[in-house]
Image (cartoon, rainbow, N blue to C red; front, side, top):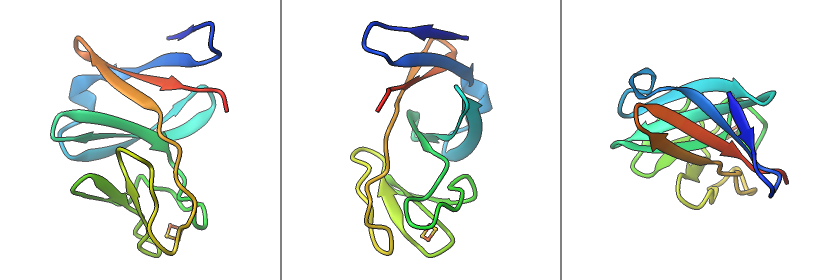
Length: 111
Ligand code: FES
């Protein structure tokens, strides 16, 4: 299910809250884009399922406090800002992820 808005972004219902247990990383494909949905401490985050270093998937990564770590070469990405640590230098895109009732919604912005 999706809804387009005037700004060119699209919001998708990515599943029930129960599908995203606390402190988990879950892969999803929405709007043809592979993303990960993260629940950390009850807060939801969504980002591309590709490390900005060498594009390995982040769904097999590790959750740290406020960050997701790519297990391939150890880069981390801040869940609030997208800021990367070496060996990645490029910030990761963050999508808006919100809880609406018992559903999790992700908004993909056109870039
Ligand atoms: S591919 Fe993620 S740190 Fe290298």
